[in-house]
Image (cartoon, rainbow, N blue to C red; front, side, top):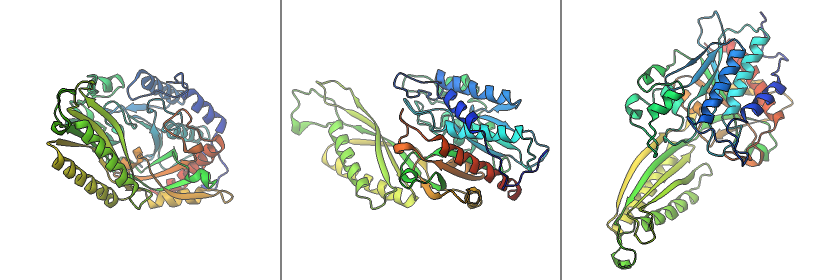
Length: 421
């Protein structure tokens, strides 16, 4: 066995990593050259099996927990807890091949590099693929990492189903998970030494400054709320304008007001989106009696998010004062901003070669690392996204940048292996 210091010249196999990116990128490819590896779809299940086949080729044992997360850890005689690397394999509809998958494949490549070079590590090194990180038909994004960290329990998910009636219980079982045993997937601070994740930036900050490596300092908070506007259906021709209680008109006024609230906020790191919108009954001769929408607010501090929500509530008060409108609100996600671990941040910085530049920056997207940070030391690296594209077929990151980030992660792991308990 070899003892490799953090100053070693050892690097990952870039060609092998690129091949795996391309192979995995073929699973779920549609006619628009985007990926449809939506949670628990046939393509998602195929990607899981492909990943498992890679683990088997390394003669690695693996475990699929009750949340259908896939865990693989290198053999190690130490009684220390593992340093895990990971992300997710699922995509948004018509998404790209780098978001999420890159973190899993870099974890696989680093684990392969350590094993084939027979490097003696003090900690076991592992790779994990988390279930359903992306928004999905079950409205349970970051599902796997939330289950692992105890933020989703059986009582929260037992009756969840898609709008088409597919139960989470059935879908999860297809991937090897179990609603009934879901609590067994939970881990705590005694189970992991650290969690590390490489991800595409999904923005232009690195690209605009020609910097190949981003060291993440914190992850944005995400607040999502399903809002239902309930008015009164009536004949679209015979009901006078002064006598209408139109849910769509009220919802539309809210959307415009929400846009103004967020645009006028002084912080650049506060953003808001109305991402779903449905109208009932949806007929040209009937005044809409119900509108449902999903509102999302992101910000780098909890205070900034709460400030937006308070302004939103004033808009609701104004709308209900103008017409006999009922507004029902259901919080889907309330995820506070999360700081990354300082020890890991410093290890990343020290692992960047002297000839390369890096940027300390916050993540404006949520990641599994957000939740893992509640039970272990967590850290993230970003790779530049060409044109800032993500969640679309045009999503692309240069292989040279991917290799640089993977090698920084490898060197940081050597450092963390001897400094973390």
